Length: 437
Image (tube, rainbow, N blue to C red; front, side, top):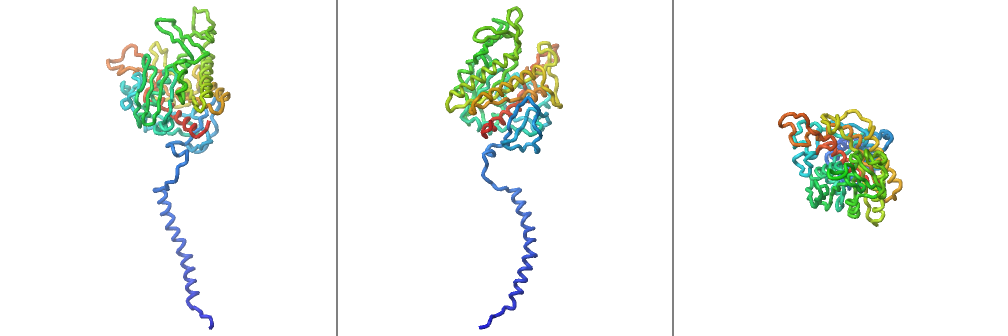
């Protein structure tokens, strides 16, 4: 039988080729915008990476340093796990969002720092945010912090600046979970502990203004402090076995008159006329107290098999008295310093000693011991407007301006610039959670 020829076959293929060439591109052009629109407004729910499981968890490697900041990293706020952010250099920028809490929404503010409730009229000091030069610090996420301290005990140890920082942290965390005060003791409740039942987490404050053993001056005794530099204060040292992370903060009490001991022998003093001791100042004493403290924590951490004690040292917080503190000195400024300032003089010496001792501890410790300097000296120096000033007392000018009104230019209003310290503390802890030391 002969081959049957379909006279329409070539015509059909020719028509199909024509349709493919003409219609397919137009089809793609129509579908592509629809697909882009769909993905933009309804993104795919892909599995979260270990970094994304915590909100605002762009990791920042904290690098407090005595040297200059690192070169620019490019796009702000896009640092990956191996990048670094020198958050110590930057500026305060306007921020309309303001703090997480206020003077009435938080019940753990010490009255002396409750500036809003005490009638401070200028609230512009709440509308600023610290912006490092190379990156951005994420806003504090209380849920993230609570997840990181779940089933843990975090202890703030030191002077009233440690208490100030802890009370700031409590207020920020209280916006999502209410803490219960489960322990208090000592004059002015200098030893307290709160529990967050939502995460079985404890936060404590231990009053220890020298970290090492000390006897504070009193009206009934010597008018100088006694410091025993070879051993830590047992009020907190004896409980290290129950603590997972320590936040240390000292400085201002070392400026007071004191006699120093090593193994119960006097080695010198600071401002002790008439006692026949060698004047040795307080810088080397601060360094020795920090060495003793960090070595004791490091040793305890190494001895406690399977239990690590992490350490954060908050650096010196400058005061802003204009005039002598005990002679009508005040801090009347209502805005931050907008130009970056050098940390010099006593502020710089105190800060440098603290950062250096953290560096030395890192060098001599094993890999299981984690210690970090929370270097807040410069950013705090640039906030002369953030102190209670006369509003350490309720409505100090209710009856007019008196001849002398006492001012607090050392501690920080709550809310206020000190909240930034805890934003950076959270970044340190997120970095540790990612396994970065």
